[in-house]
Image (cartoon, rainbow, N blue to C red; front, side):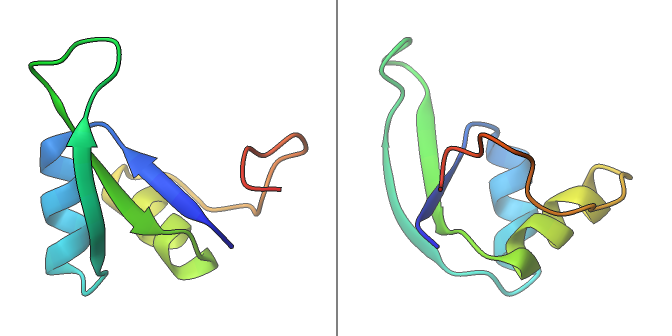
Length: 67
């Protein structure tokens, strides 16, 4: 599916704890003092993100950056 970039460290750590593999990290292009976290994009990853954020996963929206 591609790569899903996560910009919040605590969310990235929660995803790792949930069993998702971190692909790589990189510096944030807009603010070099921050790190970005790359995960393999999948339905399971998006469901985990929604669950961590107390939201409901409803599927990919139109115009999704991974399409």
